[in-house]
Length: 327
Ligand SMILES: Cc1cc2nc3c(=O)[nH]c(=O)nc-3n(C[C@H](O)[C@H](O)[C@H](O)COP(=O)(O)OP(=O)(O)OC[C@H]3O[C@@H](n4cnc5c(N)ncnc54)[C@H](O)[C@@H]3O)c2cc1C
Ligand code: SF4
Image 1 (tube, rainbow, N blue to C red):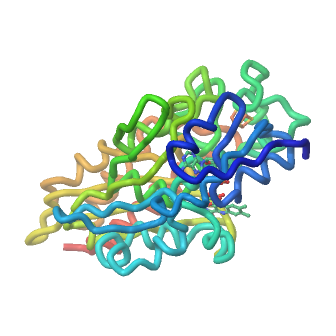
Image 2 (cartoon, rainbow, N blue to C red):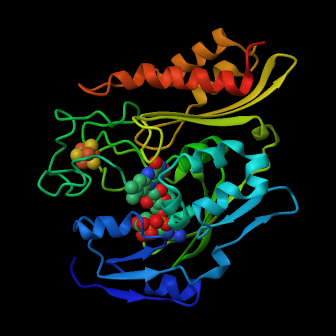
């Protein structure tokens, strides 16, 4: 690792002021430090935001929304009683990720901005459009078993690795931001970019912008929800395919649905097409299979990851069955 400056700001304003070109915010450090050790991330300075206590709270607002500070640890969020009761899919997604030790360090903000697990991205001996724009993508004709089938481009097929973000894609919170130009908020769906021809640009944050919190909407039917993750081993492994599902079913008919997939998309993948097939239909296997086909419609397989299309469909059908059962 090379030398860098460590800055410990005492206020959000000081953090933003110090976030000049070449610097990075550091939260739990569980992704950033690994990337720095490999010289994949080479910040000249780290702005350590862990002292900003205001970002470490979970608060239920009068209208039922829940505000989660960017520094709340993944373990604290997963075990929070309101989250576990009102958003089981989020709690389950968090607890399916990494290991207890990592979840005790990893933060809400850092989890959202963690980088892909594409093998070539982590190995500077290979070219990679995400690491060095314009250098090429060896994954497309190489070993691509953990890569995406949805949202890919001819420049990058890396999958988004986060479990938490799949649940968030289904819940659709607001992401609260604070930067040199002031405060703003965006929909979670707007945070991550598709790779297109610029896979090195992964999110829509402006230079120097800090994620301060997310605000979960009051989504009453999310109490009927589940996150299911399929992976090569039962623990400490990223998803091959995962599904986050919330259903509002009345009298056997689906009134509202939220569907998101993980392990298969270049960003946390909400499927409004699948949701559309579910609303107004009878809860049950036949309906769920139609939704799964819609969710994977347009998926593009590569040599080693074609299995993910069927796997993701089955994962989604199984999750729908867990939440909705057969009418
Ligand atoms: C061995 C291993 C296994 C793992 N398994 C899983 C898994 O199964 N599922 C899963 O989902 N994840 C998994 N992870 C990833 C882990 O969840 C992430 O590393 C973690 O969530 C990142 O959070 P952090 O706070 O440590 O981020 P950091 O490493 O501190 O930061 C990550 C990025 O976010 C930026 N950042 C951090 N906070 C902010 C903020 N508030 N505003 C703006 N930018 C910010 C940083 O500048 C950096 O670019 C695994 C990690 C490891 C090392
Ligand atoms: S898939 Fe994306 S991250 Fe992986 S080698 Fe290709 S360009 Fe790089």
